[in-house]
Length: 454
Image: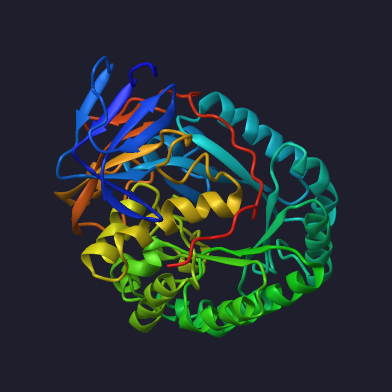
């Protein structure tokens, strides 16, 4: 006879990428032991009645930058307030730095200090000296690596020679390339034209980074990946035009995956008029037409993931716009804002929301079926989500060190109430209780399991 559950959730609606059901969920030894009706409560250490609430798999945020005002520990804490239970951080090697050393440092730091389970991506700003290190980095369990087609003047750009060389190495070793896809040379010219001199203005920011440049860079990356037979992941897709290149890749049945972010799904370029450099993001927040196209692409499967691109940087809103950094705080509001726009806005189903926030990220990066679903044998990474809780987002109730939010004053309906990682409490009574160092490292193994379609 099976021993009693350690933890039992009763009365809620369980949501996975396969559907919704009224069911209980029993947890034993950090794993989901059983999902079903009227599970036995006798002898359970803890029974939680979640009547009227959803039980979701923990959110997996695969796009996190823990090197600005929020470090590895802070990112894990802030993410936990928003219902995320697993992170994948970018470990960047800057100009002249060793990729192997930087990834090793972040792996050691996160292993000591992360409150959540985590994986790592490598990221290269000096491809000629860092691409040759890819094989050794992959031996650490870091099998996904990011390259920039932007930032040509800064010398961070990866040219086609180095990109296809890297893709060749990744393909031979069951890895995956990730590409920040915008035309760097074109952007640098347009920045000189629009954002410098006496007529420079933030209102020209989007003109300096047109959607055509995003489409071109995605198309070029897809073609190089096709030749190298390398899986490709495109982060932060922002525009209707960019979707054409992704759909063409899918028509050719190429292993190309694409992500968008809640800022592109919930905001439009008008925010630059009120928030200025705080809303400076690359690629930029675009038009309502682009936003509508992104939601449609999530519905039809062109886009498979929503992630935060959390990059909380100090900015001077009164300073030179061109000199201010790219990025904004997004990690705490990833689930609430995607739910707000997607479910309350009638754009996607709740099942699809779980696919793009939990199950598809787990499948793409090799964590599934351990992560990303609610099924017997999976880690008990769980979110109790109250769809009736009204919450007004303000800087003072957010937890990032950056001190602002682009959603200031936005009232959402639906908020995470409590979370668990491997059966242990993470978010309880509005506070994060998981301790630094309690997170475990998850090696990535990209593309092992087919994605769910909408």
